[in-house]
Length: 314
Ligand SMILES: [Zn+2]
Image (cartoon, rainbow, N blue to C red; front, side):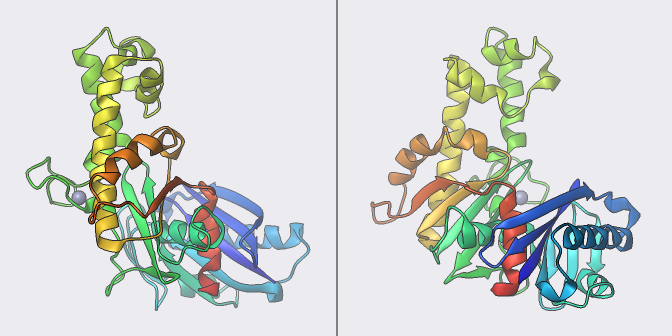
């Protein structure tokens, strides 16, 4: 028997056929093109599903359930995307739309929560019933697993850990508050800081890497400059790790998870940061002893698909 896991992203939608142990058998993706409305997106999803069935010689009856990970807040009970800023969706009855074509149970959940669940089922947090996955990309998201279950609050709006303020008088965030964590540790944040550094110090390796064209700075460049021994990049990364550690310690002090996993676009860079991060977090945790393991994702983007697929097993 199999599961279908769908990662409904603002750019791409990926559909995966997943076995009962959380292994992806095959996956395919298409552009989401959210502007055209959800009906056409669902039609694409169904088309890929049938392609996967055919390729792997299976029937609809072999599918236990379908799970969808979507950005924003989803009413998981009724299968409705309540609100997604990224997709520009409001009250979209996604589950019932999918069921029109495929008569199997459909589960819906926030995508960062799916990533956390995927890591718990088959990734770096496997067998850790109390775990947190922090997803660092353009923004910062996260999912919290408590006693082996996704925690999404009393109103499906949990758990926006990127909007935990680490500086009450800090910069203004798009959510309306000041000093949110994602303003300091997202890929966008590091690009913004690197641009400021490069503009101020043309002798820096960050400036050199883009030949002075500041717009070309990406989130990898400051890390490369840091590794090449650039003192300005070193300062920047030091500050970055500090902000990362403040939010991480906050999460540990509230939840005391067994493990925290870092996923998302930044995880490739974050692997270089784990050691300095742990060293700082050690001095910030309540009680003085760090018991929580801090690691990098094992699954990468597949965590979204696997976690969505396994919602039916939750
Ligand atoms: Zn915010």
